[in-house]
Image (tube, rainbow, N blue to C red):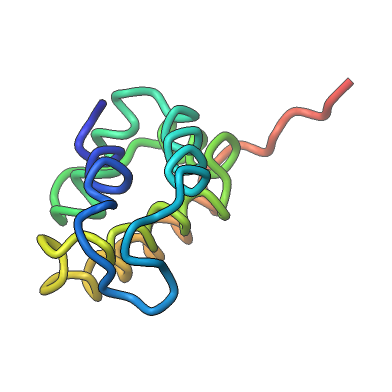
Length: 118
């Protein structure tokens, strides 16, 4: 799995830095995050993690389309929330959330509208 999914779900059991989450996330929560991450291609996960977690790189229009139309807003923000459980991100969590919101807003504008279901 790419850095984004690992950062967001693989390291969840380390500690509870937020009162919103238990110290050890439930198996259902972890499965939800893994399912969310699986909606993106590896290339898109890499682009998003580079931008959101590390503040580097660009997110392509194709990846924006995946973020908005495949991952969707709930999964995007659930993955973002999961980062507060990782002590490695404690000092940069506000920047991570800011970049996460920034990329959602950008992608919501540039993403293609979903196709009508038949």
